[in-house]
Length: 505
Image 1: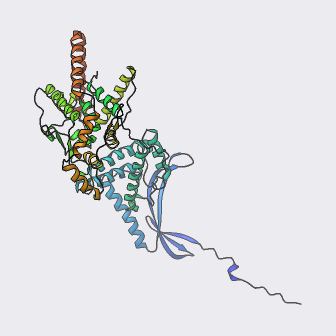
Image 2: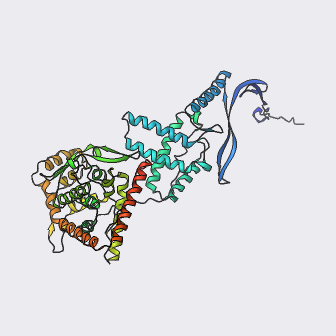
């Protein structure tokens, strides 16, 4: 009988199941044992009940948040728990709001903003950048607040995407939402430097997608006929502030901040030159005067239309004030600003530009005229540069030759490549033909007689006023006084006054 031999492989034998038990050591710490032998120490930190976004339910639910961490020694476990308690105490001293033992996103955003403000005071970053962050922080609070209050440790990528969708529904552009995303990424990067305190382990913003389609804004430029029509429409207004914006942006190439920052002392009436050395911008609801973009101070020539517009504007302001304008006063001042002696708020200029532009187009439609293409106030520079570089072909086939490339960019205050900069500066500053090409160009391109159109419009308004009844005059005066009182109330509240449109005719 053959003997049976069995080869036994020990690797195939069932392994003995390890028995893991726990033994309490002290509050928050227990000893982990394997088969009754000491193995490690487990520390537990209780953060209380927190809100977390449930993907299936599509809403926020509350759950107990406990975090455990294993250490080789008891000393390490004690150290970890102690660090958490210290950080909680420090956070409370700094008045960081804790709810259910968690830190809210809105509070971290305020903390991050304060850090950036300190950096701005040291000159490391610009105040304008801090102001952008402040506005964006206010946007975060609109969503991550109230019922939507969330703690940073519970926020997932899905919630960030939900926030992007929320902003899209509010009419915020994709470009702006992309800026919000960058800001949120920076906040999470800031929190990851102290993972224990904030309870975050990854940047959940990184993978968040923006569903809003990309909309590329195309700057519009008027042709020389449309430009002349717009100038004419501006001369018919009772307040020449819009005329100033049109002429100085579209035919002199000034930026919005430069339009707001121009002072009467910057104008040399004898040489017909203007020094662009001030840029007035809005920072934290306050106007701030600084150097132009890229700190590039420049001098421009006034063509006939630009010179006439500034003369009309100056005489109009002096008639309202009953005295000469102060050299240090800003040029851009609406009637309501002059009457109540406060500076035109820069944040309202773009809004007023849009309102008046739309008003003009409505009047043109009623008069059975074609609407003028609308563009932002900054698009005025686009008109300025486009016409200068391409030249103009008139109806009689005559050509207004384009100006020098270097001249155009220097007059507009653009920064050229270093290799071209020296050439540009030389050409522009020597006054040997090229600089005057721009003046020559606009003297030929602007065929609207601004002085004559303004004089005629003033005469028409005077005749209309003489024909008004006493009741109509009293009503008009009462409406004007009402606007003034409203502006005064807004200023007393500490809010930037709404620049109320006067009755344009």
